[in-house]
Structures are given as C-alpha cells and as structure tokens.
Image (tube, rainbow, N blue to C red; front, side, top):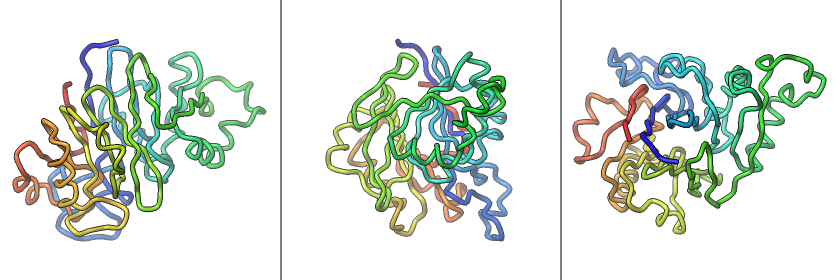
Length: 260
C-alpha cells in the first residue's frame, strides 16, 4: 500500500526524562517546551492505521497530547523499561480494533513482556471484556523485512552497549534510538534516506549511546536529506545546541510531526 504518512515524535528524552527528578539545572528548569522530553516513543501515521514504536512510561500522556485516539500495531526496539513500561496503556485498543493488538518484537522482548505483565496472559481473565487487560498478539521478528498494515518494515540491527536492539525503516525514514554502534551489515539499510533519526544522548561520550559528535559522524556517512537527534538528556539545551548543528540536522522535540 502507499499514500501519505506522518511521523510524530511522542517522546525524545533519555531514560530519566527531562526535567530530571531532583535536578535544578538550566535545561531542567527551562521554560522552552522543546527542552521538556518524555521517554522515547514515536508514531507512524498511515491511511491504513497508526503504528507505534515502543510504549514509554508516559504513553497515555503522549497519545493524548498528540490527539491520537487509536493504535493499530506496536513495534518494539528493545525491552528496557523506558521503552516498554507504558504497555498497559494500550489495553483499550483491542476493544477499538475488535481483537488483540498486534505486537511485533524479538523473542527476548516477548519474554520480558510476558514476565513483566503476567496478568495480560492469565487465562482466568479471558471472560473479561476487551479493554480490561491488554490483549496482545505477538508476531516474532528477526533481521528480515516484515509487513505491518500493508507497509514494509525493515529491521535495522544495532548495538546498545552489550545489548542487541533494533531500529526500523519504513519507506525512506529510519528510526534508530538507543544505539552506541551501527554494525557493518546495517549501513546498507540506511541508504537513500529522506529522514534519519539517530540517538544523541549528550555532548560527552557515553558507553551505551552515541554522543552528539558520534551521531553527526553517522549522519555524514548516511547522508540523508534530513536528520534528527533523539533520546536526549538534560545536557542538550535546544536553544544553545540546535543553532550550531550542520545544515539539515536538527534536535527533535516532543510533538514534532513530519509529513512524509
């Protein structure tokens, strides 16, 4: 299928969000809403339905803010808490779509979900109406392309410290959050991009995330038409850093929607 697609940054922050609890730094106290960052989730909006990537802890608030009333499928990049622990917020969607919500993930993500949300799989709750507990239908993914709502999704293998995680490409947009290394076999999956979204935690190096400089090196290699930084900490001041970025590169911010 084809047609117009939108891409919305529901959250662009690191695992503790911005403002960070207990912090009085200039960014955490900033009045600029572009320095206020929920944990990372994004949404592909298509004529066939909405595809959510990750279920951050603020998912309900993110969807309400973006005026998104329904999600038709969920993709997971990995199982860390800041990308998964809002999963209970999807429990109304099976009632809206008339059956279990499709969940596309690797085997290890499925295993963690089953252990973290055991009530979603307790058969003694089968008599409850849709919407009472999450009803989920798992679809196992690996490194091969797969289809969601008529769209081809290309998984992009990435390294996040010692963890194997996934980025996703739909059309000419690639979303690569939580990455410290792009493996050699993944670079070819990033060719001819209109939009490249890449992790850039902070200016200084970090063992599990790309720094700003490292992200810019990756962007220069990929050469997309546009690039956006995400998964950003309170070390990333929108007012100060964004004007210094190269042409075609921007800091993403919560609520930003791209028309594709």
